[in-house]
Length: 554
Image (cartoon, rainbow, N blue to C red; front, side, top):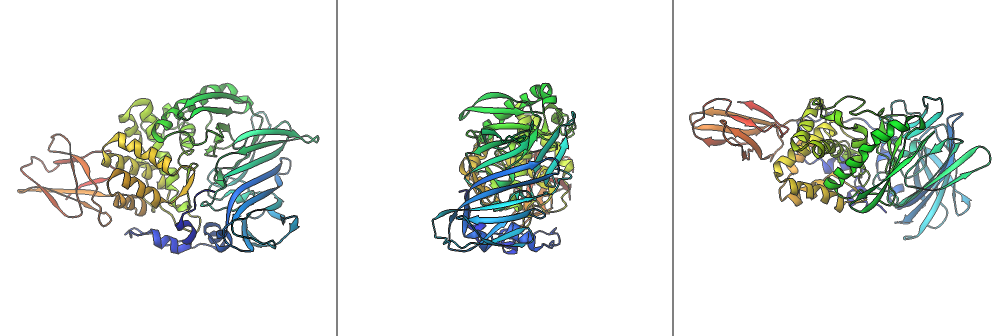
């Protein structure tokens, strides 16, 4: 059972938003309207709260000719409270054929993208039981994957069928039935996918069997031995080649399997080699790769890529950068493959520790974005890593807060990437102790390993380990769209400085150069402070560019 915090169990909808949004923002955006489907998807409803998902037994047949699927999922669960009404998520237009428990069909009714099953068997606290959902249909087609979700039905350059899934945000229930609630993850899972010959399917975990049915189809059965988020489960079916490496890592020997399309094998042997130094860098910064039992796979897919746990998907065209471009504009990002680095960072930041509500998706994307700078640092040194992160600031929009709306499956602004990464880079400067910073990042991973967490959990841990109260910094960058402004002025008494455009209590230390002298660290607040003395110019204070702030002479 993945950890479910009290907050995840008790806070729902707008109540959750109110409870966590302690710091008001002067830039608050109009509250969006949400549908009943949003609430059912994003809230820990009474029909979800009474049971804990422990194991999924997912078996699906993929019908390439007509773009349909059919199958069933055996949902094993532990009873936490007595109840008879169970919420199971399966989005339209997928069709439930039946729901069965103890060999008996149970009554079901659909409510938007949710199925409510009325169970007849006794549900006693502590019992572990199973309900099986049989279903079929033509799943939604992802038109712009991975940003919208569903199935991707393509062909490779040779004209062979090339099929994949990507469903972060929209949810795994776009193609299979489950408890589609991020705060509750199963301890393990079976994934058995049947595809027409000669296609090969690659999914999460370890391949434990292949079985032909005599009618031109093969079932590829995988077992995921460790906890997994539901959106990480994937289908990847095509004409694949395969090669493998063994990485000697912090937790022993790690199998690294590579699955390019057969037509791209030679290119993959060169490009996928980057996964080895990537693994070494991230283990150094974050601790052991989280999934030694299930291994690491890099799998070619017919879209850009996704962080499917232990089966990272890749579609970056075997070139460095992001589709051949450098997101930082510095040239640093053209020295490594963005998808290999960014999506693999999610094995730590998204898969091992997973947000319990998508409103806190910055836990995934801010840390993964920051990881890009750390990888540059591993390759070229600290100054190069900083240059990369600073270079991405031009992509920050400050259009809405990074933290989204709780209880309705709503993430916040896309600024969770570049602004979130720069926030973490700024906090590193505040700490001003690189070895301690590395210990904090590794500590987050060790403390919350294989758990679902809230943003508040991680913020509190980082502040506690640093011995500094970073809550005003987190509030400033995550909850508002305001960039801190370092203001200063000069008069006969000396230099005066303060923070402006900040949340109450914002007192972030900052490194500055005063009048061309050696750098010093000062601690501005919202109140004017004075450095007495005579200074030669009005532009007497220069703020270190590693801090994501603005500077203004008052």
